[in-house]
Length: 457
Image 1: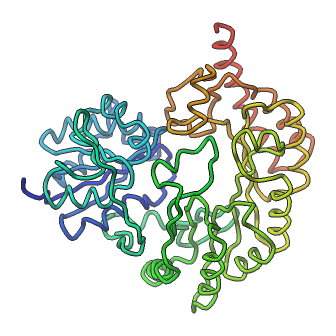
Image 2 (image 1 turned 135 degrees about the horizontal axis):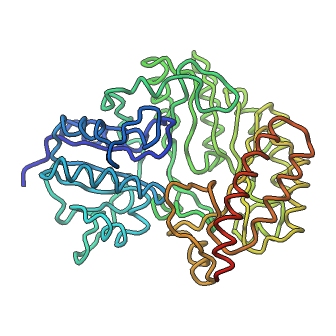
C-alpha cells in the first residue's frame, strides 16, 4: 500500500476550556516528516462558538474536510467516548474515503467494546507513537505492533524506552496554537500573560491505586526524559512563544526524587524565571525537596489525598499514610508552595467515622485549594472489577462526567457529601462557601438520580 500523505489528528474535548493536546502534538511530531499533519480541536457542544448543528459540528467538520486527509486519528478517554462517537460519525459521513483509526486510554482499556461501537478501520492499544509512524509510512496496519483488529493476531505496541528519542511536540501542526496561550493559565490563583502549557517529563507509575488504569497505557515502570531534554522543551516554549509558566502533567512528578532534585538544580541555573506546578506523591515529598522545588520556580503542587482514614487509604491501595500526608502539607507550607488537595467521596468501606477523620485531616493540613470527587470505577482499573463483582454499579455511561457530576456506585457516599458541605458552611469562608455551593448541586443530583435507582433495586 502507498504511504498516507495527509493526516488529520482530531482532539476529543468535552470542556470549553482549551488545553494544549500534548498527546496529539507528540504523535504529530513523530509523523510530520512523513506526511502533512494537522491537528484539529473542535469545540464541544454548548461552548461559546456554538458550532453544533443538527447534532454535528458542521463548522469544525468542514475544516477537517477542507484539509481532505486520507488518514484520521481520534484519541479519547472513557469519559469522552460519547463525544468521540459524535465526531467519528460526522467524519465518516463527510470523508467516506478516509481511513479512521482510534487510540488513547479509552480504546486501550476496552478494545473490543470500542471496536464494536465505532467499527473503525483500525485501533491502537497502548502508546501510539511507533504504531502511528509505521502506519503512516506503510499506508496500512497489517502486522504493525499495537494495532488491534478483532480476529487478527495482536502484538503489543512497541514503545520508546528512551523518551528522549521522541521528538519535541509539534506545535507547528496546530494552525491556531496561539489560542492556547491566552491568560490566565492553569495554575490556580496566578495570572500568566501566555497561559500555562503542559509538559510531560516521564511515563509510568509504580503505584497501585485501585481507581487508576494508567498502568495499562504506560506500564508501572517509570521512564524519565533527561533533564536536558525537558529543559530543551521549556526553552523552546519560553524563547519561541514567550511562555513563562508550565504545568507538568506526569502521573507522579516526584518519582524518583533524585530526578526532581537534578531538574530543579538545573532549572534554577537557567537565565529566565519559570513558574511551574505539578502532581506529587506525599510519600516522596519532604521539606528539603519542597524548598528546592520552590527555589526553581514551583508555586503549586496537586496532591491526591483521597481520605483521612487509614482504613479507606488501605482499601484503595493508596500506599500512603495519614502521617505522610500531614508531613507533606507541612513541607509545602514551609516552602511557600500552595498545596492543592483532592478527596474522593464514596470509597469502599467508608463510614461516618471515616468522614470525621477526613474532616479532621483537612483542618490540620490546611490546603490552599481543595476539591471533592465521586469515586468512579473506570474500566481497566481494579476498582472497576470490584464494582462488577459486588454489584455496585448503577450507571456505566461515563458520558462526560469525569469524576464530578454524579455518583455511579451503590456504596456510601451521600452522607459524606452532606458532612463536607455542612462543615464548609460553618467556616464562613468564601472559598469554602463556593465549594459548598458546588457540592449542594451534586447532592441534589445524587438524590434525584441515585435514590430512585436504589429504591428500585
